[in-house]
Amino acid sequence: MAAFALTDEQRSYLRQVREIAAAELVPLAEQGVEGSVNRPLLAAMGSHGLLSRLFGGTGRSAAAMELCLLREALAEVCTDAETALALQALGSYPFLLFGTEGQAARYRDPVAAGTVVASFALSEDEAGSDAAALRLRAEPDGDGWRLTGEKTWISNAPEADVYTVFARTTPDARARGITAFVVAGDSAGLTGEHLDMLAPHALGRLVFDGVRVGPADVVGEVDAGFKVAMRTLDVLRPSVGAFAVGMAQAALDAALSHTTRRQAFGGPLSDQQAVSHLLAEMATRVEASRLLVYAAAAAHDAGAPPAQLTRQAAMAKLFATESAQYVVDTAMQLHGARALQRGHLLERLYRDVRAPRIYEGASEVQRTIIGRSLVQRATQTRQEGSG
Ligand code: COS
Image (cartoon, rainbow, N blue to C red; front, side, top):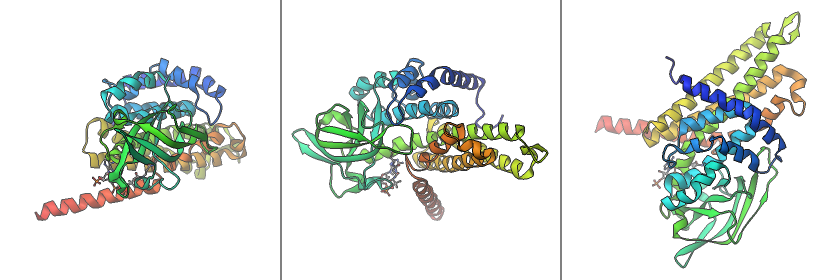
């Protein structure tokens, strides 16, 4: 059997997910307002049990392969549903995986039902790729802290009901002075605004004006929040790759359908060697991306060593998102002017495929992570050899 071939059960479940998406989620997505959280869509995903599958058997673990398969399947049919699902995982994994029982008990069921919208608030104007430079202040206040500062480019903001907020508890300590907090969306002193971005989902800026958080809101340990952020991203990054694979597959299917039907120069377009070589290149990159994504997710679920997980997650995200950009662009080229028409599948994919090369760690950050990991492994191996 091929490596990472899906089981019959997985295939049939994903078929079912695509059917639910086409019949029920696409119409709800079409009724949504671009750039706003679509609550009816999330609630429908919750009622079909799609969201609860992200939280493992106990509801306190990440099911990486499940997350990837769902993202890939939904991306082929309804990217709005795909992104809504992923953001529930990104926003809630920090406190469900690393938080207290109290935090999990309060939010797990409503997040899984799609009635509470979750969000991950890490980036700031001057701390994007360099996340350890973040400045949002958590200043001591009695037994807790007050949060003051701003977050920006935050998915689901400012509409989310619960945020995982990464704040500076120790000045000048970079990664070793950051703490993660759970913050309710209706907290006093928390305001925000929408940003108009090249992405179909809600993205916004948050302003914290002395927002009070207590010891019960700390996720993990004080000053150990950077690791919570990085470990959460390690789980999510392969799934960004899965999203890219789903979009690329949809573009490839469209290109195959078009080029085998379209007549030009006395035969189907696919008879042109220039065209068939492009189709071959597209299909090869989609398949290679899929295997990298499945390998990274399977390694996570099998409990592989952290350094390996981080490296594989970065490789999967890097290769799949860059490949998807190529595949969607090439599919558009093969379609010609018709794909530029507003509302065409490829016109939409062309817009949707761009952001994943930037968010959850730009391609350049992934290369840095992979490069560092390779050097570290080579150095370690050499030291062990000479020891
Ligand atoms: N898992 C656990 N711990 C990790 C980790 C991981 N994947 N990555 C780093 N750490 C730890 C390191 O071990 C180190 O710990 P110690 O201080 O105990 O030694 C600490 O975190 C700092 O790590 P590092 O020195 O590698 O941090 P850098 O400032 O060099 O930054 C990058 C690392 C660039 C990888 C990080 O800032 C990053 O991922 N940036 C992109 C952020 C991002 O994805 N933003 C998108 C927001 S969501 S849309």
